[in-house]
Image (cartoon, rainbow, N blue to C red; front, top):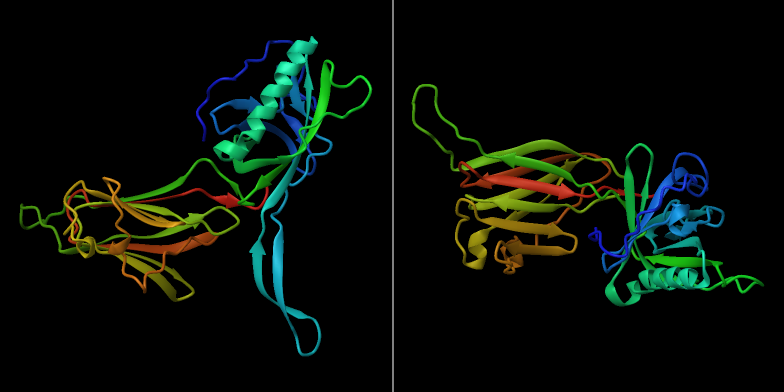
Amino acid sequence: MPLIAAPVIVPPDTGEPPAGGGGGGIVLPDLGRATVTYYDPAGGVWPLTTRALGWFTLAEGVSGLGAAPYELTTDPRPRGGARLRHAQALARSIVWPIQVRGDTHLEFVTRWRQLATAFTRTLRDGPGVLEIARPGGTRRQIQVYYQEGWEGRGAAGSGWITDAAVMTLLCEDPYWVDPEPVVVHREQASSGSFFTPYPTVSSSQVLGATTVTNPGDVVVWPTWTITGPASLITFTVTRDTVSQSFTLNPTAVGHGNLLPGEKVTVSTDPPQVRYQDGSNWVGALNWPSATLWGLEPGDNAVTFTLSGAGIGSAVDLAFYPRYETA
């Protein structure tokens, strides 16, 4: 998420409720009351549901917050109809109307220009982030690019101290993301025998055999961080008795076993393996049989197996749940 930086504006205490009335936020079609914030790629934070700032969302006209659009590939059935072969999620378009006001023409123009820059700079500096927060504390975000629509109404009297724009925002990834990651940590603790008062470490260790729950609506692609000591690390997921796995072998890139405290990070989408100094270790995976699997919605039976594990050996899994709707 972008850092909070100028132009952050603290609204004065006017006693005026936010757009939509009530105790905060606006009432979005089919979604209820929410608080909306836009983070531009330069770090600017733009609340979009507080009327006292001089701009606010017009709830009537907001669209594109529902389920992602899909393209369906079908095959004809011999006896009529069709059979679904594949469903491909498409880019999403969000329509977002905003009204801008000012006490003077200069104040209005300044706000109008600042907001225009905040959205259009996504075409030069990378995507912005639209965040919708609910009264219960949950938040969902989506990356957006400005596409079109920052134009005034062109009606008589508009453009002097008030005007409205109806933007279309393009979302390359159509799914909404929880900004708080789900993290699973497994670490090898010290071990010993009740009969022998000396530390003992096995040559291999099933560090984690657990159920990882994906609370989202669609597949997520986790990131793994492995901390040595370890000589060979295998990650396996089992669904309906069918297993997928990949193995990291540090010796395959000429490094040798991971020493205590050394770290390697494996990203599954896009596929990427990085040693702690940033060097590329993608060759350490057991290609071509390696499958960098994702986590399906619901429960996933996951196992991390480390050879050469010892005290301090650890595996961390992290992912951000993804959702169809805001």
